Length: 57
Image 1 (spheres, one colour):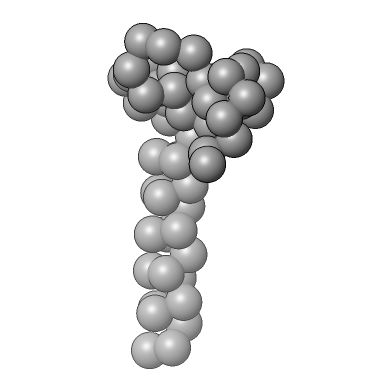
Image 2: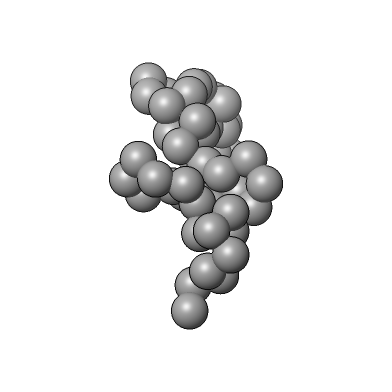
């Protein structure tokens, strides 16, 4: 019984690992919305706060 539980757990983990390696649609757009210098997400059309010199104050 314990062997069955372990085998099923390992099979489920293998399936999740396969799905985790897939590239989801829209992933390229999400990564392109990041600031190139600090890595934070840009919101809106203006420049990032790190380029304004604001630093979130």
